[in-house]
Image (cartoon, one colour):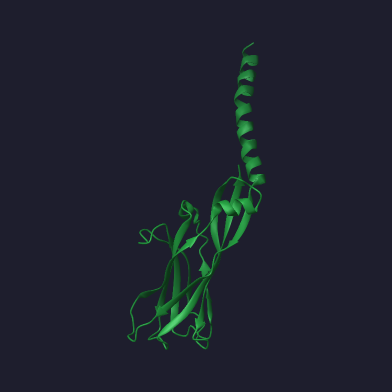
Length: 186
């Protein structure tokens, strides 16, 4: 008789465990990845005629991500955004047209949820850039930026370490990027 009670209790305990495990597996099956191209961010950088030691801020700005539009575009009215990563991040020189990054020694990109960048999280960097390049592509660190998407926007900052004085007074540049979001429909 005791054996039947133990088997019955085991079955009673096993049913919720199987149910919860299968729900997680079902959620994983319907979850999907979405790659979103970020809006191009145009900016100017005015250099100094002096050699700087350390890093300078090349770009600092707010990037908007409309998660509701992203869900609606994929046919869902609501969902949970899980891990989110940068898949591409690059800075390019637009003006003057014949300029290159020969003046840039290294670069790094950070994200934050506030304009003061306190705290900030490094998402990638570049070392020993090609001096003939008009575009510098950031080597990404595979950092989950989902905590920064609790609002409809987050901040990105790009720092540069210069080789010396800049050859032009002002550079017109732009920042391109894309992120990959893991979406779990509700």
